[in-house]
Structures are given as structure tokens and as C-alpha cells.
Image (cartoon, rainbow over all chains, first blue to last red; front, top):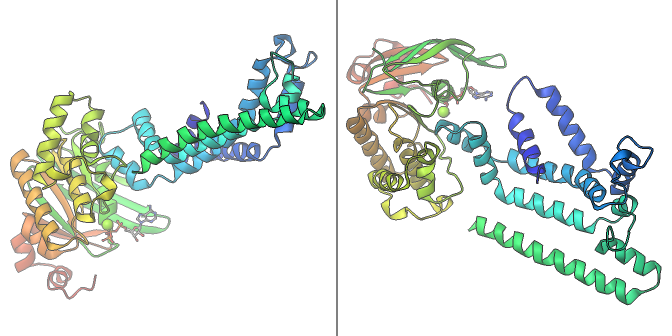
Length: 195
Length: 238
Ligand SMILES: Nc1ncnc2c1ncn2[C@@H]1O[C@H](COP(=O)(O)OP(=O)(O)OP(=O)(O)O)[C@@H](O)[C@H]1O
Ligand SMILES: [Mg+2]
């Protein structure tokens, strides 16, 4: 989950003076990518990884590694953005209290994340939801190869196109079930933070 | 040797000059009451002393092995105007600074228990901090700062908006802390009665300047400055 640090870093850095310009740029990038259609991310990764692309020699196209790369590109700005909002909503009072008690650097960041934990969990939930429901990018980069890069969503696409609606619906049910279980787990963790 | 030495501190927000050349020497072991109407810059001055805000001009230095801004938060404690509780239990709130300093667990247990006892919160040990009343939360914040036994304790209107019972409890805790640890206390208040009850010396901050500093007795009974006179008589609206 490298995206939580990104969001936190953005929020914490916002207070440090003199780095406004870099920060605004970083925020602009995050929030632009936030709204980027996943298919576009898939296309981008495809072009990067294709044999004639700059990263072609890695041979990652049509492999799970390539798919993960695309997912990271899609999910990172979302998780970073939501985390950013959560972390910046931690009041100045709380940060000052931590500082006055001696928290600096990483200890301070850890405290702020802990104070924003409900929002950070939301970020993880949103990011996870986006990742498992992704089709387009995963199809382009992964190629929907059986036993290798075929995932639930791409399998649903395939079965539907073949007219195997029963299979498609069953797979959909499995996807929904997995999503539900993980959501339930995160939700309960979140609720515990509330009480 | 002074405990807190404020020299020529100036601070402006935009073009609003909030502090205008503050000179203040707080003696070791004393309780100094900083008075002033709302908006006179009391909180700003305290935040600068606490190292949470930087001064535009001037300096703050600490006496006697207090590193102040050097290792902030170790020797200078700060309790804010509005209680800022962490979303944890009362115990974990008070243990926060001790954990940062990697104090052994049994010691944390004992020290937190003592600190909570001194502010009358022993029974609330395992309560979630956000379920406390305002007065209890402020007492917890006091305990959270005091448990680290800072040589200098800064208190920003810690009893504002509290009922008489909580005010009495906190004032007793402040005096107790000062007597027990021999620490220097700089307490900001806009309540002259409180300054008189807990302070040994008092100063009046007005429009970013320290108008008058003297023993509380002299401050209230024979103020030199006309504005101090007006303030202690309650003729100055604030
Ligand atoms: N971060 C800030 N940015 C801009 N202006 C500020 C900031 N902090 C304080 N000020 C301004 O500085 C002035 C002094 O504020 P300060 O909080 O020090 O007053 P105070 O004496 O503590 O008042 P009160 O008794 O109401 O707490 C106010 O006019 C306030 O608006
Ligand atoms: Mg104030």
C-alpha cells in the first residue's frame, strides 16, 4: 500500500513552507489521475510494455506483473487522494498536541495517520473496490490468457461474449462475494475505531 | 538565571502585527500569569515559546538544562486553549509522550496512574477520550503534558469555559505541579481573578506589547500603568 504514504506526505508537506510549487504540482497530478479513465491507464501501460515500447525488453506484457502495474497506476491516485483528504482533516490542534509532546518526523506522521484511520480505511476500501472491479485496463495489458492473466472480471466478459450467461452470472456472484467479505472486514475494523 | 527568556519577539500575520517587541523573563520555579484581552496575542506568544510557531524577529531561550526548541516537547510542556484529545483511551492519551520516549511499560503504568490521580481522573483511565466532558478532557490534556515533568509548563487559558469545580481542580493541579516538580509555569488567562489566585507575578499584554510586569499584589493593588488599572478594575471591555 504505497499510496497511503503519498497521501500523508502530501497533507503533511502542505504545512511545510517553501515547497508549495512542487506540492501543487503533485496534487494536480494526483487529482488529474484521479479522474483518468482506467482504459487509458491500460493503454498507457500497454504502450510502455509492448515489444517496441520503452519497457518492452522486460517482457511484462500479457503477464500478471503488467496487470499489477496497470492496477497500481489506476488505484494509486485514488487512494492517495482519499488519504490526502482524510489526513488533512486531522485538526491543527491535534498535530500541535503531538508536536508539543515531542513527536517529530515519522512519529508525527504515524500519529496523524492513526488519527485519520477511519478515512485511511475508507481510502483502502475505495481503492480495493476499484482494483477488483477493473476490466478494461486489465484486458488490454493482461490479454485475458487462461490460467495466467484471466481474472474474474475478464472471465465474465469472455463468458458473456460467448453467450454463457450462467457462468458469467456465477462468476459475478463470486466477485461480489469476495468484495463483500473484504468490505465487511474493513468495515468492522472501521467501526471498532469509532467506538 | 531565567527559566524562559523572551527577547524582542515580533510576529505579524499578513500585515497585522500581533507581537511587537516582547521582552519577558520568567524566573525558575515561579508561576507567571500572562493577562490580556482577547486577540492581544497571548496564544501567539505562548506558541512561539512552545516552538510551535516561529518568531519573525527576536529569540526565546531557556535556562538551566532546558533545551526548549532544541529537543522540543521534552522540557517544555504545552496545554492548549481547546483540549485536543487523541482518538484513544484516556490512558493512551496520557501515555503518548512516555511511549515516544520509550519508557518501560510498568513505569508508564505507574506514571500515568499518578498523573490521572492528580487531576481526579483515575476512574476514567479506560474511557475513550472523546466521551469525556470538556472539563475532564482539559484535565486529561493537563495530565498528558505534566506526566512528562517538563521544567517549563505553558498553559493557554486552560480553564476558559469550565465550571467552577473543574477550574478549582485544574488550579489545584497547577499549584501542585509547580510545588512538586519545582517547575516554571507560564499561564495565560484573561481572568484577573485567576491570575491572582495562582500567579506569583503577572504581566499585561495589550496590542502586542507587554504593558506592565510585576508581583501579583502590586499588579492588582497598585498598578503603575493606567491601562493596567483599567484592566484589573474591569473597566476595560474584553
Ligand atoms: N495563524 C494565524 N493566521 C492569521 N492570523 C492569526 C493566526 N493566529 C493568530 N492570528 C491573529 O493574531 C491575533 C492574536 O491572536 P491570539 O490567538 O494570539 O490572541 P489571544 O490573545 O490568544 O486571544 P484569545 O484570548 O481570544 O485567545 C488575532 O487577531 C488573530 O486573529
Ligand atoms: Mg488565545
